[in-house]
Image (tube, rainbow, N blue to C red; front, side, top):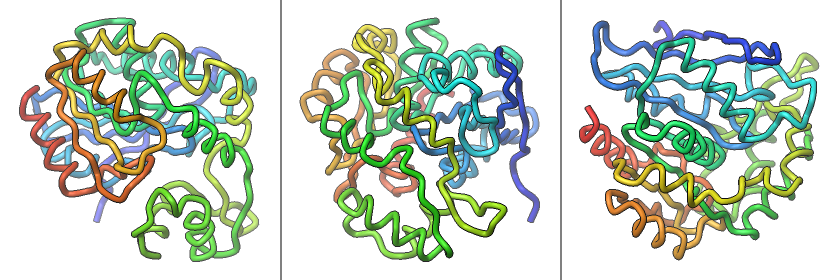
Length: 288
């Protein structure tokens, strides 16, 4: 069966060749496009199943940020920051003539969504925030700092899956081997020497450790740029990155926000959970 997406590229302002998956949707579709923004160590494959579903009715664009997947690695590791990622995506949107869209952001992708809203309020018609908010808990950031950039490789996909289970089992205590295998194939790649390794530049860990890069400061002001925008917050019941208090404050500042809590899951839900898919469909029905 032919792929339902095209691999496309755009060029960043500093000359990097950046990759995105373009799911064109039905010919002549008038519905607003969806922009999917992945988390820190992820890439465009992270939205594969969701993008396939959404592309039945509308265009879906899924970029891989610099240093991930099929996008070039940056020459300067300091450019691995949310502000630079936003600038890269803004260039893509401008080239595609997209002025209004729905944003689905997982973790770092949600931070990017808030920054984009603050830059141009009113152009984001709907938002899905996946296990992220304007405040991030220090414990979750410390956990991520403990594994990002550490590298490592595996001889087989089963070894890779078991390595992920060992590292992240507390976040997904009920997952079986097949689910860990699926995550491995989303986040890892076979290298030229036949070993399986993480599909991102280990140098992304360097700026992540600097103050203000894991989560830019004063994001409540950016979040308020989304006031009145239909919003779905997806939160893992076991999440260590977004607290119940932050969720409550988000709901006060945007009364249109609905929350789906995924039981027995930490950071971050896959967005393939049936209750999450149903909530995303309901949100998109509001912004057609």
